Image (cartoon, rainbow, N blue to C red; front, side):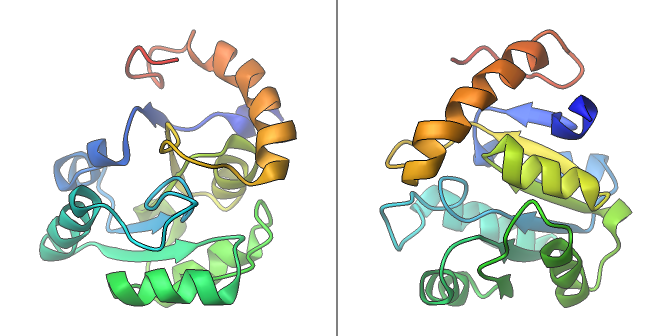
Length: 174
């Protein structure tokens, strides 16, 4: 079970998830988590750097979508800005929302990455769905209260083990 909590790759920023990396992994699609992965939880707008990355991925032919546990209103507003299909109120880590996203993208699990900032929702769900999982350090800003009080504390224990796996852990951030 512990293996399902480990991402295939752990990077310090979503900006490291670039077309070159994804092409080297032979991936064609990317499913993004929303809050603290592509936008700060306390914002409705992505940073110019993230928007530039999304445009670059699109230009290189990657199919992209969003899977979020957040509300329809928030998810659809941001997804519309980025011109991406989205699954809202996903109830991650359940596999079903990831399968819905794969259908929207028209990609298979083996050719799709999941990029997210939480181990117990994004990475666990992505691994159970058979996706290539990439854990990113969360963006600065507010976390959902449940994430802040419970999940982040549990994640620290998993991250301590993860940092001992050089094939996954790329960087030196705490």
